Image (cartoon, rainbow, N blue to C red; front, side):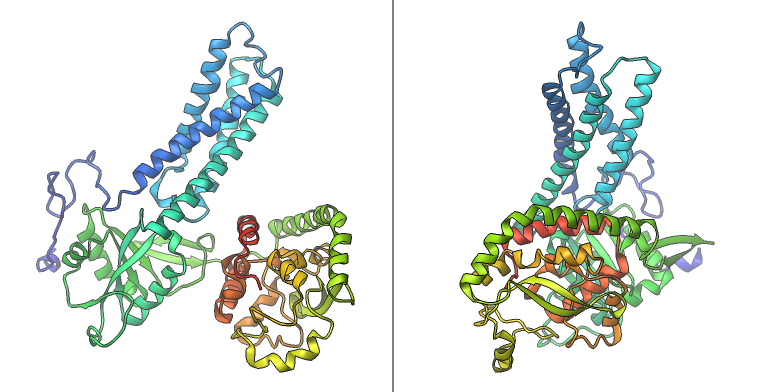
Length: 502
């Protein structure tokens, strides 16, 4: 242990007796986290979960005549089981599955996955209890209550998360103040990635350089830059509650381990941001080998049962969607004809999966001479990529502007989905004449293009070309059924508020 003699430990937990390495002696004394927003938020989730389960039971009892079969003579016992015991069991199972763990709250899909798993466990518990105690229950009523309970818990938690995101974005509440450690370039890259998602609640407040010196005062940086400072004293000065070790700094095992020792008992979170960007959690696994945490990155799952299920669901939903919107097509077609005589649909060659060309279906929103007038508008292009974009494009007629803003012009692409040329969710389909697809952009061709995708729900036409490509490649590399469901859900709100559509 002579190696550690010169290493200073600065614990910050005077409330409890401490050992020689700064860790509280009592195993029952839990470290108080520096960031405590998760406590009231978890309390709110508890109330919402209880309300969701009770509401599901109330609806099942009110709408189903035989809901309390087997308990006709004991309504009090039935109410105790349905409105007290069932919510208590559900809460206990949710807690056991980590649905209130601060690591999974506020961002990502792990919270919702754990809710679903916990709900299946509740179903198993109810089924076992009914079998073991030979309780006469209405299977349909119990099933309806459990299904509604799962739906309500998920919906209420989603609403709570949206409220948390609003509080973080608009009022800067429930956030983590983060100190970035690494080289200036690496720290700025992490800062840019965090800034793209303000709803995550991560707020960088400073950068501590591991190499070089602090930049000149004239150098503009988004947060103050420090060098040669003691980490813990800088954390206290900035009132930070999280430290993120960026890039090459994370490859120094001795220093990283010592930093972790310093932070023990302080309640400050330690995060490592390796030089591995745009790779989602499900593809990354840590396997410790003789004390060395090996970071494994799995290949993207673009085949198998999940991919087959996606294709089947695409066609089923496309068929249902076409049947729903078909009655409105005559009115839309009449509006287009009255705006400008010509075809109702616009057919254009696009590049699909594996480079195959197909003709996309869209409702026409421009005058028939739009292609001829494009050459005169080249200088007005507001996009920095392959596509021509212009907010007030004179080639778009009035009804066409409404069709674009509401995304109704995209609905005929359900035909392409039904024919297997497109998917409901995927990268944006690019015109064949503009798509050279060189370098990383070719990776988009591993999947079918989609009607909606990550770029549509993240800004649409307001995004730069680089950001659009980055999101498309992220989708290809990290595809999952949950990502598709989440993207389609977000699409509804993007369409309602007409964000970035022109």
